[in-house]
Image 1 (cartoon, rainbow, N blue to C red):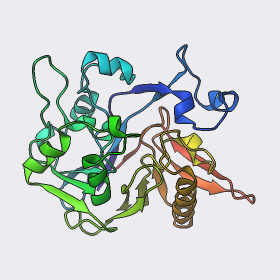
Image 2 (cartoon, rainbow, N blue to C red):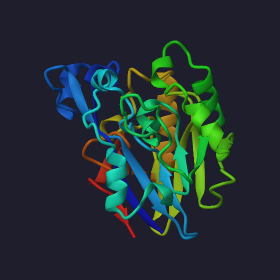
Image 3 (tube, one colour):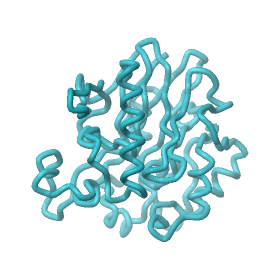
Image 4 (cartoon, rainbow, N blue to C red):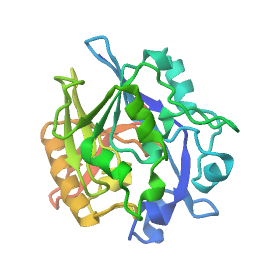
Length: 285
């Protein structure tokens, strides 16, 4: 089994939105903002080449599908499809990917499934052989979004995924497609049906934390995003999952932290979680 962190397109979003009710005087120490109050964010994916010969991609990042006006609005930095270049550097072509696991269908996690924007050309899926795994509740949310998060979904993406005939919508903690060695924790604080995947490896479990804990600062329980649906529920879900990971001496994987791909966890006598043994990239063979 081999695991590699994979860089996708980067993004700059409003720091106040990313840190919810945390005062700027505090969060700017963790994530220095630019002149527009935006902070740097990664859209990092996890590539697993497992012991069954499969190439599995956990998420696809934001990609480069936005037209120029929207790319500017949502702070996407690069015009090229960075994920494809990063996969190529690891010797992986789009047609090599067997399965793509999506924690949910917000554009910064699923946009990388699509071709880069080209004037006059409709978006198309870039992974021609891949099967797709997504939570049933997350799928329903994409079909029937709330006015608060409607802009977070990509019009037409669900139709493209359905048309492949290779879509599994997961309702529990396991995927028939993935099989043994992969389990999910379902979270609803950020968005309904968020799937947080745990991958069993020879070095222990690795949990893809998605938007439950987008980066190192959010490991601290009270820190949530303004984008979260139910912040108090999210904090409860975060505490339960991080405690379980810590008890198993597991590794956590961050999708949005610009500097840290993965870490271990500690918890002090007052109950505060802290990231430790942090690595900028994860490459396990």
